[in-house]
Amino acid sequence: MRAHDRTAAWPTPAAAHEWAAYLCVAPLIAALAMLGLAPDYPLRELAQRVSVGWGAALLAFTGAVHWGLIFAGRMAPRAVRIGAALAPAVAAAAAVVLGGQRALALLVVGFGLFWLYEHRALGAELPPGYLNLRRPLVIATCLLLAVTMLVSETAGVS
Image 1: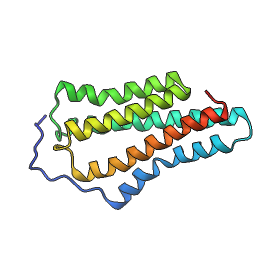
Image 2: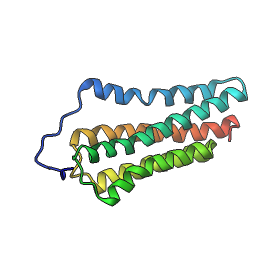
Image 3: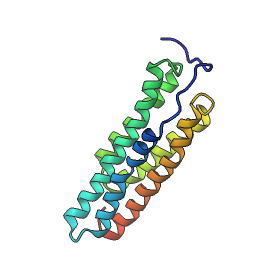
Image 4: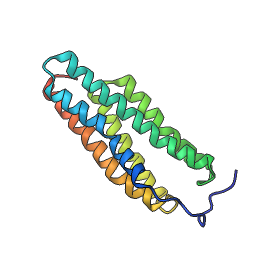
């Protein structure tokens, strides 16, 4: 495996890829709407579980992107980077096991910490297009998960 070559050109995200990335928050929006509007407890609980499950899938995916960069030789395979690439999947699995509002809180923290790691520790190595796309996606995801946590409390779903 070759070391990361900072001189190699990074592809820029295409408009279709950006739209696909933004559409990934749509299930969180739908689940939040269902949670707030569902007439009975089982549907509200299902909506919360959808938010936790989808949020966990998205968080695990962020680590998978870093695995891909390491395996493609775009990032040096240092132990700390491999550990950091695994951490989102571990946090996502923990959230699924926890369930409920605690899971939503864990996901918000997981997204926030991984975003900080990307921008503070790897900002100079990751392509600007990727970082520019990640920022609004993480903000939207964290906001939706946090609001889901608050609406869960109001809806009586712990």
